[in-house]
Amino acid sequence: MANLTRKLLTLALIKDGQRVLLGYKKRGFGEGKWNMFGGKVEKGETPEYAAIREVKEESGLEVIGGVEQIGDLEFTFDGEDFLMHVLVFQARGFSGTPAESEEMRPQWYQIEDIPYSKMWKDDEFWYPIALRGGKFKGKFHFQGHEVILNHTLEEVEHF
Ligand SMILES: CNc1ncnc2c1ncn2[C@@H]1O[C@H](COP(=O)(O)OP(=O)(O)OP(=O)(O)O)[C@@H](O)[C@H]1O
Image 1 (cartoon, rainbow, N blue to C red):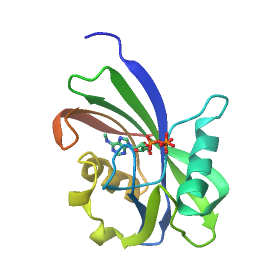
Image 2: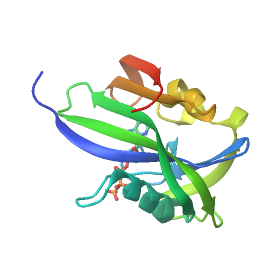
Image 3: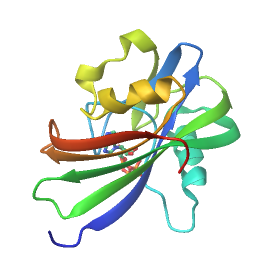
């Protein structure tokens, strides 16, 4: 396989008791899907800083107490020459009220109502680990944006 261009991105879990905040992506990569908040790590930023910035930009919430890494995911797409390396974080706390942005429409979901059929297909594999407080590492190889050709996923103690 040719060398893949690696892109570093973030996702942030905002959990409040038995509910999680998801956003409906209005534009860009993953448009039309519900997802956690996140995006590209910009030059000079730490991934933690980028995660906190994206939560603020996309959901309107302020992260309080920083973020903790809970996941490490790699996504590749058949026939594409890039690899998306996504670091998943959990916000230790937050304040504010979710507000719609140009990119995302936030909405609280009870854990049992998470709309997996309208999300990236990998989500239903690793959300259950994340939602019970576990940490995980995984790789998912997609055909297009809807089919997973193969994947690996393991729970880990730390990164
Ligand atoms: C393939 N399976 C996947 N499963 C779950 N989540 C996935 C994902 N693949 C990408 N993601 C997330 O989708 C967002 C894209 O972000 P993306 O819009 O490209 O970045 P950013 O907000 O910087 O965009 P602009 O460049 O400002 O448009 C970013 O959170 C990234 O982690």
